[in-house]
Image (cartoon, rainbow, N blue to C red; front, top):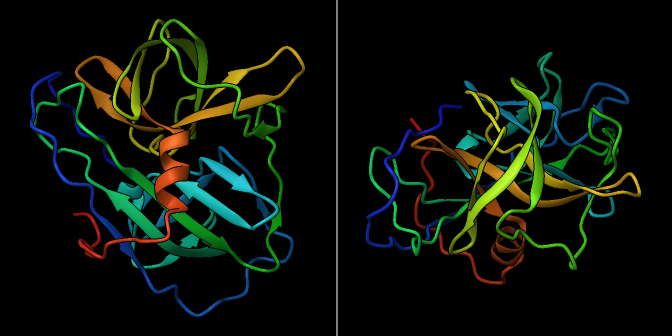
Length: 228
């Protein structure tokens, strides 16, 4: 998926838009097809990175601008699940102010026979920990299917999103990838999902913002079209 290159810092905030998509009829996944955070996923012509796997609810998360017509497949074209909802108001070709509210997430319902786990390609389990939040200067890592793992620090924390520097990199296809804090106990605590590169700064939407929006009881159907 393409990532808009945006000049940093002056756009009036736009309203968050969201849409619920009717999932395609459940198809059979590859028997035992592995599904894990950091894997490559495809929707129509979009290639992105799976950001988080909630094993208990069999729900996945990636960037909303990765959305497609419904079916989600792995790198080999095997069906792994269906898009269920998304929200995306990522500015394209515009400048962004630090108080702009960025909404960019998609939820995926995994196929019953997909083999889910929460382990990143590097071996760390990716978990949620409400006591860990993005803060300026915090060491974080990002995993994308194109660039792999890159680490650096949070440059600034804004209105539900943050920018990164000092080593975090990304390329086309890394959208939706997890941003996490590597812990001394071997876990990786998710703090965001990769959104885009604005100017020279990679940016991510905060995980707490994604959870709040995705789990909200009211979702406004406002923009159901797939991205260009």
